[in-house]
Image 1 (cartoon, rainbow, N blue to C red):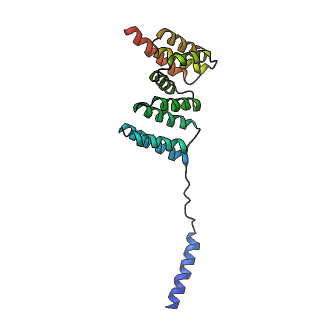
Image 2: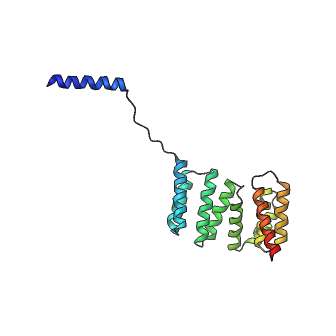
Image 3: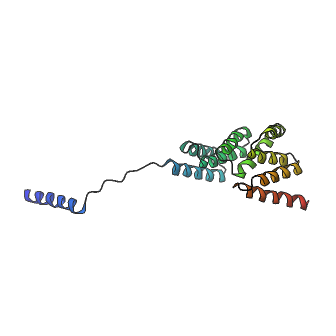
Length: 188
């Protein structure tokens, strides 16, 4: 009986040395992957109109991946959710933060301009953006003119931006938007 235990022990040791010892896998937490997961869960909740859960998921995504380009997406999604449930002031903060993090997504500008319209502060913002020297503020100014039914001023301002900044990633999107606006104007 004792010899059986000794033989089993010796065979086990031989097996370990022949096959090799493998350390167990380490589990590493990747916050960025988890942030995208929570964002996607939030989008599913939003699609199902479960707004509170969507808001919480977007907040988790933002906290897992703060101050990145992806965070701009999460903040925009959070802002859109606030817009759906009728909280434009909270949405405004989200859209403004999204633009600060990544100012080359035209959708963020559209959402913010719509938010300013919902808050009835378009005239104040138009005056504010007129004074700015940032080329990106021309995008916002043009959209605010359009929201304020100053179509010609809006189209001219956005077209001027496209002429001044032809190489930016956002410029082709603005040009496409201008084509849509002008075709709507011509059809009416």
